Length: 169
Image (cartoon, rainbow, N blue to C red; front, side, top):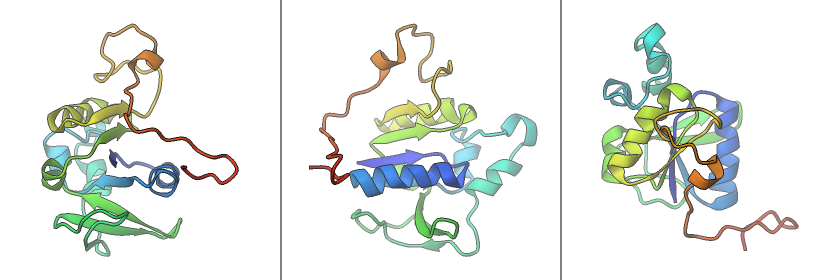
């Protein structure tokens, strides 16, 4: 499974790194490139700061490097790695074009400002879409009044943890 998630806090990202790649063996990818902002998928603080905040999160850094994917995914152009010094981990970043060509299976938005754009991207590429914050009215949930538990998509691959080994059987 390939998971695309927006990025805004390194400790939150670390928790997703522990869950998806380490525990479940899935790949975790974050956006890179101002196209995510320009095409309205990544919108954090747009109203107040224009593109200044987006540049902090989406523009490549001098020490980013182009690479093949990690976590068992095939090498492909358009991916980048960024070293997270605070957690000693390499993050995987992908451009908008790359993820249109090789779509994720799941798209997670952890910021309310990004919910609508990330939901639109998920719909365009056929991915499951999930907001990361609960009890928010947003474009993913719309005006549906059913309990959130009834709206949660089901992944047709069983994942159960053995609490003694903390591993999937």
